[in-house]
Image 1 (cartoon, rainbow, N blue to C red):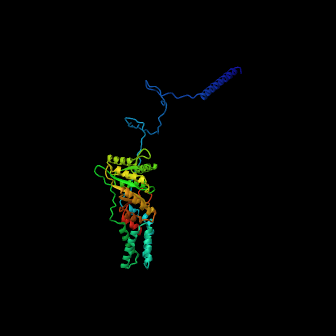
Image 2 (cartoon, helix red, strand yellow):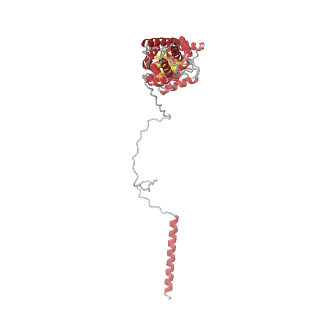
Image 3 (cartoon, rainbow, N blue to C red):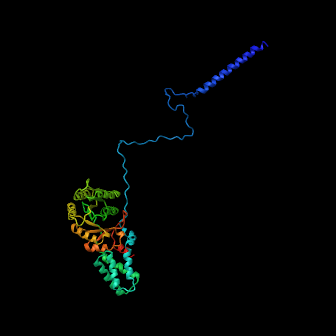
Length: 394
């Protein structure tokens, strides 16, 4: 018994020592994490970020792209050129727009055919036919000519067949519209200088818009065009014209200030056209009231100043087809001042006044060369006699 006491004491001391060492090791493990040893480095290599990182096994590898840098670096922003419009071809455009024209003028054709198809064509019926023509602004003399000719042909042939009457009416309308007139635009370049086209008309007829649309017609014919914004009295006119030009890549010559001398702007436009070797220069003039003598004199000055570069090839008068006989008076005054060579009839799509074509040609002795048939950018069409009459009697 005396021998066991020292042994038991020794065992207790050893157990206490083991528990103490385990507790110390446990406490040290909780307080600080032991880092793995650093990988061996080559002599002279300084440790850096990522030296102890593993290479991911599944990561794809990629080579470094080599990018060529420009020799010089500028602070100027890169300007992207806007995409230019591609105007529709001008040839045959009126045929494509015939349905729209027919909707506007169908009342004229239907009314005439209804009258001519009556069982009895007495004096009262022929007077109604003449009245229908007059309401279409065809003019007194042309209306009388058509009625007299139709009356004689119906009497001789004795026909009431709608198709034959329609054909006779078509023939008479074509005759008075006069297919023999030269309706071509004089827009061919003359040696060292471009063709010059002045566009004139009163306010509200769509003159500036017509110039922009005409530029599209010429661009569609592969012509180099320069625009002249000589309407310096209307603040927005130059901006409006430049917008039209920018859409098809056509330059616009304009003044930096409102109220500048229109003749000077027109002169500079033609000069620019000569320097750029353009085919055509289109000059938009201020909308004039025909009863303002001073303004009309100024329009004459514009033409005289432009002619210092050479003759003006075309003077196009823009008329609103809805103005009727008032437009006829405008046409006469403008023709006296600047010698109009052609007529542009706008807003013809919204009226049954198609007879104004005949009336204005008879009054001035000059042809209708272009007609506007809508608000679309390519709704200005070269005038074609047969397509126009077919739209009326279709």
